[in-house]
Image (spheres, rainbow, N blue to C red):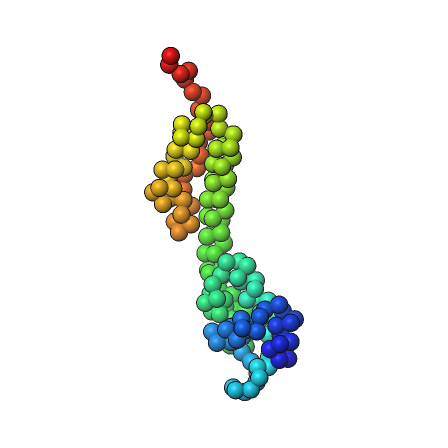
Length: 152
């Protein structure tokens, strides 16, 4: 099938198909210089690329998992590492969600007076909430403490 047919059937733009060809994710069966034609198996290869991308894998990771014939060669260690990275991101996002919920319902007169919010600000200023760092460096909000009565 030609590149237009592959694009129509998969929803992948022809420009992306040409890029995938260039970086070695797919290969046309047509001779160089001719209009690109692909074997029907390219549809499954593109599905594998989409699945890998949805799982957060880079195109380099995906290419490493495809044999020259396009069949998957799964690197279980890469998949396990990606799963652990996703778990860490989920944990970080859950901590942020708890912090946001606390900030929305905090009984402190202002967020500037909320110890939990102050800890989150301090962590953000230190870069601990950046996605580039492991979730273990993030700050999980603590339970609200009872406050002593204000002094007159």
